[in-house]
Amino acid sequence: MKTKKIGKETVNVITLGCSKNLVDSENLITQLEANDFQVLHDANESTDVVVINTCGFIDLAKEESVNTILQFAELKKENKLEKLYVTGCLSERYKEQLEVEIPQVDAYFGTMELPALLEKFKIDYRHELLGERKITTPAHYAYVKISEGCNRTCSFCAIPLMRGKHISKTMEDLVKEVKELVKWGVKEVMLIAQELTYYGLDLYKKRALPELLDALCEIEGLTWIRLHYAYPSKFPLEIFDAMARQEKVCNYLDIPLQHANDKVLFDMKRQITQAETRALIKVAREKVPDIAIRTTMLVGFPGETE
Image (cartoon, one colour):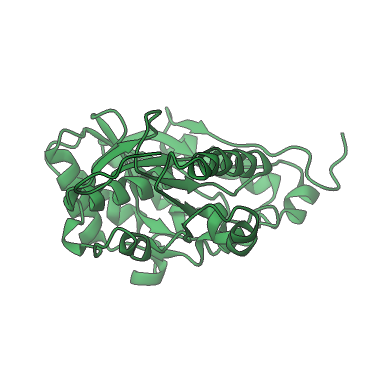
């Protein structure tokens, strides 16, 4: 049995899933360390408390998340772990089922319940820590989440169920966050979201990613800005213009196309055709001749033939 320690517990934060989850874990670590907790990330050593930040996007990710929870639940049953908390996408979507099937977990939290999770440590969420995020990536780069949630309705995707509607961060907050990261040695920021091109629609009533890029490029000491997760349908071409005029914006775009067959694209509710996709890529290469395009393709969609 673990001996009772005097003082605050040691916490191990386990991150599963995508880079957006990693940013959430980094925010949790920052809040805990600011309150004098000793925090480890993805550690193999024994700690008093474990927080598992789960993924629930695809079956393999769900399986990994459940297996990880079971692994630490077994330690809890053996009195080798004092507290076990679960947060993230799997917990958001399947909380009631998980509470029944794995009762060894002390509490389950959704994707937007960081303040409630912090209450378990008897601390309050500190808003003044905005921008002071401790990164777990190599020191020269960091992920910056510019929005939360998604308004798209792709038929294969459960992200809106787990992350909710699209909510943009303000440009002022993002500039402050990146300035703080640069102060600690970050040279490259990777802008991430469920859907980058939606940025600003809720706050500024227009797609404002180009304006955000211009604002971030003014930050002294920042060298590179890289764009991830840009939806191809109704793509704002002004992003390519910003990429072309701003040296700090990498000639790189992560744009998940998912498919090229019109019927499958329709069934996927992707709101785009193969011809429109080809036209978009043509414009991208005209405006930014040396652009590098990364994509994701989904095969085996229901109704798809060989």
